[in-house]
Structure formats: C-alpha cells, structure tokens
Image 1: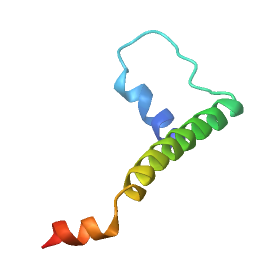
Image 2 (image 1 turned 180 degrees about the vertical axis):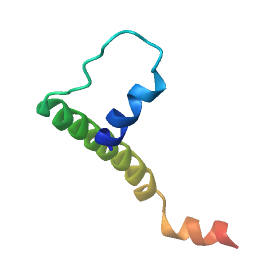
Image 3 (image 1 turned 180 degrees about the horizontal axis):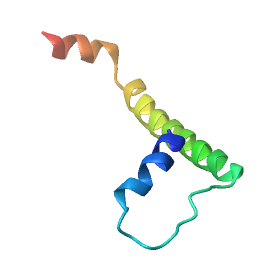
Image 4 (image 1 turned 45 degrees about the vertical axis):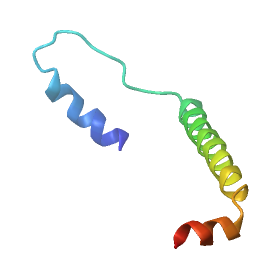
Amino acid sequence: MKMIADSIYPYFIANTAMGMDLSFPWYLYAIVLAGAMLIYLMISSVLTGKIRKIVPAEVLKNRE
C-alpha cells in the first residue's frame, strides 16, 4: 500500500518545487501496528464486558 502511495504522490504535487523524504524507519511500522492492535483490544474488551453483563433471560424477554 505504501509503495503505491509513494509512486502516486509526486503526481499530486507535480507543480511543487520541493522534495519530501517519504521513507519511514522499520520500527515506525511496528509502532503503528502495535498501536492499532492495542486500540482494537481495548475496544473489544469494553464491548465484550458490556455484553457479558446482559442476562440471557432479559434478552429473550426483550425479543418478544
């Protein structure tokens, strides 16, 4: 995905006379991935906790 964005980016700013370093160190990818996984796990645990608090009998009663 990044290679595609890197190849398309110069065409979006073709009239700009400046250079921009588009390289990222390898550890930045790991940090972004770890951050996304951490946020996913936090949201998942909050939602799962809310679901576990619901009594099955209450679900069946509200279904009818």
